[in-house]
Length: 101
Picture 1 (cartoon, rainbow, N blue to C red):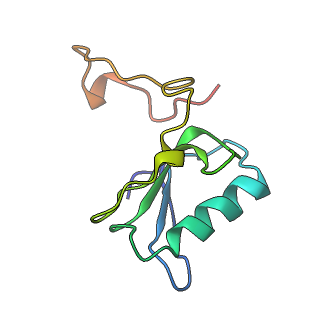
Picture 2: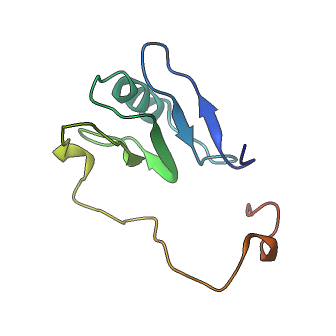
Picture 3: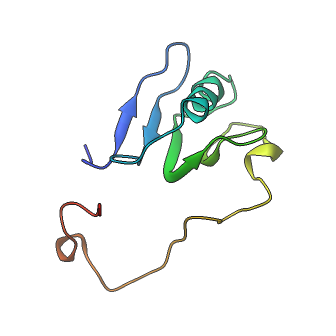
């Protein structure tokens, strides 16, 4: 398992995969994630990124894959507000074991 990845089983739902090692997660955001994990339309797991926080309608910084359904509130109006992806020439071996401050 990725040392920066936290896996949490949710009774009656899909697991949470959280990339929040060393990052505080609000209790309200955690409850939102757990509630969403119990929805019958969620596929495999819910992911939480390091910028996760409580949101109106859905948890900001979460990825909620679904089967035959769309959750408009999960997209939000500030898409990409805290995270971005970009291609680099770096490999995993080039990075330190811990990216924390």
